[in-house]
Each structure stands twice: as C-alpha cells, then as structure tokens.
Amino acid sequence: MENCDVTIVGGGSAGLAALKHLSSLGKQAILLEAGKEIGSKNVSGGILYSKKSNNGKIYNVEDIYGESFLNESPYERLITKYILNATSKDKIFSIDLTESHDYQTNFGVSVLLNKLNSWFAQEAQIEAEKLGGGIITGVHVRSLRWDEKSSKIIVETDELEEFETKVMIAADGVNSEIAEMTNAREKFSPSELYQGVKVLVKLPEKIIEERFNITNSDEGAAYLFAGDVSLNLIGGGFLYTNRDSLSIGGVYHYDSLLEHPIEPTEIVNAMLRNPLISELIKDDVPLKEIDKTLPKEEQVRKSFAITKLLNNWNELRQLYYSHKLKKKSIEDRKYTSEDEIKSKLDNLTQKLTNEYHTKFMTNYIELEYTTKLVPDGKRGRMKKPYYKNILFIGDAAGRGLFIGPRIEGLNVGIDDAARASIAIARSLDKNNFESNYLGDFYSQSIEQSPYTVDMKEIDKQYLGVILNSTRKKISPDALGFKHKLVFNLISNQGLRNFFISLINKYGYTRLLSFIESEDVYYKIPIKIADKLGTVKSSTYIPQIPTVQDRVAKLCYHEDTISHIKILNSGKNFLKKMVTLCPTKCYSLEGNDVVLQHEGCIECGTCSKETEWRHPRGEKGVLFKYG
Image 1: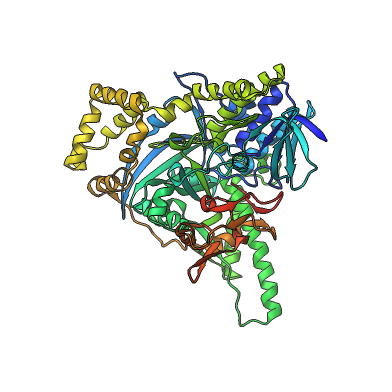
Image 2 (image 1 turned 120 degrees about the horizontal axis):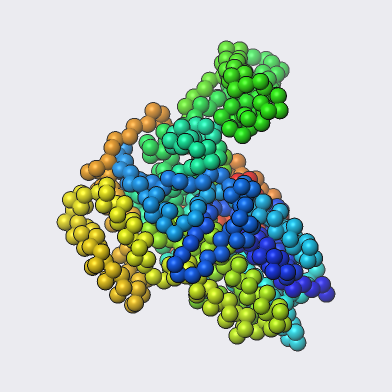
C-alpha cells in the first residue's frame, strides 16, 4: 500500500496554503482535489485581506507566498474605497467606511478564485515536488479508516488505490465530508450559516475606473448595501470591482432565508434593479438579428459573418479599454497608437450597424452565476478543530468572520493553514500524532489567533471607528426616538467601553439576535435613506436573465450518479428547497419533493436534511471565474 506523510483534502485557498507552507517547512505533502482543475470548484465574494493585530501573530498570504505577492499574483484590484449604501426604492444614502476597512489592514484585494487559486497551485506545486509531494486533481475521498497498529489513516477514493497517511488536513469546505465521516462535528445548523449568491458582470476596465472614480488603474472599490435591497432578510448586498468585471450579490443569514424563503436569483436581481447599481453596470450590448425572410443559406452566411465581426469587435473593445493589453499591443507594433485602435473599433461598429443592421442596446452582460454557504465563526466554529490525527481548517472548521461590514473568510483559512502546518511539522519531527500532542497544540494555536479573538469578543476600537464614520454623516435625529437613544449611548466612549467589557466577559453571542436583526439590516437603513438619501434614476431597465438562462451558461461534467439523496421527501425543510435551491433542482410532485441533480452548483443549501456528498472526481459544475 502506498503511503505519505501528510494528505490535504481540498484544493481551495486554505488547502493550497497548507501545501505551500508544509513544503516550505520541509515536509512532504500531497493535496487531493475533486475538481478537474484547481479553482474550478471554488467560489468567493470576494476580497482577500492581509491583516495586522495587537492580539498576536496573523499568518497572511504574503507570509505563505512571499512579500512579492502584490507584484506577481493575479489578483483583480487593490480595494481603496469602502462605501456602505443605505437604500429605499430610488433613494440612496452613502457612508464612507474606508477608515473601518483599513483598520488593522495591510491591504485588501478583490479576487476571482479560479484565476488566483490556479496561481497558488503553481507556487505550491513547485515547492511540494522538491519533497516528493504535489497536487492530484480529479480525486474524491470516499471513506477513511484507521490502521489499528500504526494509527495511520487509510484513505479510500473513487479514483485511486487506497493509501496510508500519517496525518490529514481537512480543507474540504463548509460541507466537509471528512467532518461527516469522522463525526468530528455535526452538520452546521442554519443559524451557523450564511447563504451567499453572486453574479459576475462583464464591464471594460477603463469604464469601471470612470464609473467608480478610480484614478489609479490598479485600485478598486467595494460597495456594501443594506435596506430594501435586503428584501426583509438579515444580511446585505455587495459590489466589488474586479479588473474587467464586477462581483455583485448578497450574503444572508440562512435561518432568515428559511423563515422567509426567497429565491436566490431574486436576491441578486433586487441588487441589479437598484438604480445606483443598474447605472454602474450598464454597457453597450450588441444585439444580433438576422432577417428571417432571407433564404436559409443566406441567413447562415450572414450569421457567420456577424458572429465573426462581433468576436473581433469584442476583442478590439477589450483591448481598447484595457491599460495593459493596449500598451502591449502598441509595444508589439500590432497597432501604432491608441487612436488607431479607436479608429478600427469605430469602423467595426459602423460596419455592424450599417451593413448588418446590428443594434447596440443599453443593458449589461452576466458572465457567471454562483452560490455557496458560508460559516459564521461567531456561532459555528469548531471549539476543537481536530479529530484524532485530522486537523480542520477554514470553512471546514466553521471559521468565517461576519462582524457588521467586516466580511472575511479567505484570509482566515490561510491563517488556519499555517497554524495546522506548524502543528503537523512539530508532530512529524517527534513522530507523535496523538490528539493530546498534535490536536491540542493546533487547537491552542487556533485559540491564540486574532481571528478567533474577533469571533469571541467585540473589538472596542473597531466599533469606535465605525461609529466615528457614521456620526460624520448621520444625525441621530434621523433615527427615531428608540434608535436615537441607543445611538447616543454607544457614541459615548466611556459608556460604550464599559458595556462592551461586560458583554465580552459574559459572551456577546447572546446579544447577536439584537445586533443582527431586521432593524439593523433593513428598517434603520430604509429610514436613513428616506430621510437623508439622494434620488437616483436609471436610464434603462436591465434585461435580467432567468435562472434557466444562468444555469445554461455554466459548464458541467455531468455524473450519472447523484451526489445528493433525499432522506424524507415530505419534510418541510425540503419543501423550502423548492424555493431556496439556487438552480431549481427541487420541485414538488403532490406532497413529495423530487430532485433533479444535473443543474446542481454544489452549494450545499440542501445538505442539512439530505445525504449530501461532493461529486466524484472531475464531475459536476466547473466554475470558469469563481
């Protein structure tokens, strides 16, 4: 039987960081990823942060991949603006929270995980191969057992011969099968989860910079939204600028969704219909039309000709609006100047319009639709993130940060990965993989992480920074008597610090239902927007795709065997999946719920009351952007 020192299950950012750091520590490790390619199963909102803290050491992305991370990695934009928008119909009130975004932050970058994780994998693979390790894609772990004599883990997969490993890192996400196989933790309850839904909208690079008033081409903005766009749910919306696209969506308490079921597509559609957002995403979209009265052969000929011209038009337009592509094309003498590129683009537009009667309409273009569950570390983190000689990291350990406008997950997983790697290197050196040596050491290290502190306690300084930003823009009189009283009390630093000390001492999770409420996410923002907001108008009505259209754009490698099994088709929870499943995999036949798994995007929304597994290796959805 083959054997290895360390096996990492899951090729997301946390698992890849573990492989890279273990290799840097001189330890052999292999990483198993079920997707056909690294990054094809990964989804994020998303912003990756590098942080600093007075509460201890944080292991950041540059600690793992080097100080040149910002110069070499394919991140999207460096986030330098952070704006909270309160919404009520066509009224918007904006608050600049950049100061709170910058609090204890080295940098934050918008990312698309297919691209970024592919780069992480290349970097990790180089180091791992030197020690006989590396990455194996297209492999799904089916079961685990322990050798009674050696205590090694025997790993069974759907694709490889079984093998032994001394220790394992479970980085297989929020719906961790490793956790379920070992009973290391229960499935997360709805109160411990958020559901995130996102669409990626195409928009040329230079237009993004003009719309968001970005003067440095490497920089970008992050917008958060609360108010009526929340659809009476507990959570909020987001818009992040990428290099030549926008990530737009919402993140909501899962138990709030169960209480008020709303289709995930409607959540993101509410964002897209908001007049501020619809104006930010609008673009010139060519509409291909063929005269149906022409002979069939002529229709086909014209269709090919228009398609070729549109492909050229799209390529040239992307080139014209991209700083790097335009500069390179001129340096390579493909074009002599920017004016020449613009002239050719104008000529193509004119040819499409005059000769082929192509119409250019104001609309927007969606590239990809995604959904995922995200753990709330305040409620759901594993208190002991290990089982025997298996360590759990990132989402698999329930370690996500949701604190007001602060939403972090990728950087938490990277910090976990470094701590797990250090614990494992120590155990390998001593050949001791007992729980009281490996697991307890890792658990203590995780408890010392500043991220864990933030999951357990309110940061007085951070709250003060947010209040300072809001006080500059909002008069307490705009809040109504009850909320005005609360606002004035917490604005007093002495009183605020006294109450926070008491709350932290006795456990602030008991107050979460008050802090994370309809008042905070829905009613108060609407009231503020109504009283203080500015009317925004949209110049068009976005033509929003149906869920069927969105699913049709996704790439699948279908598995004839369903990775989901319904346990009780009459349960009320499953009936809600008819609404809450983001790709309409569930439907009602009489009083029973039935499943068609082919369109599944593996978000795990239904996992609580089903037998849920990740698809076999290379099967299921393949995200192009993530």
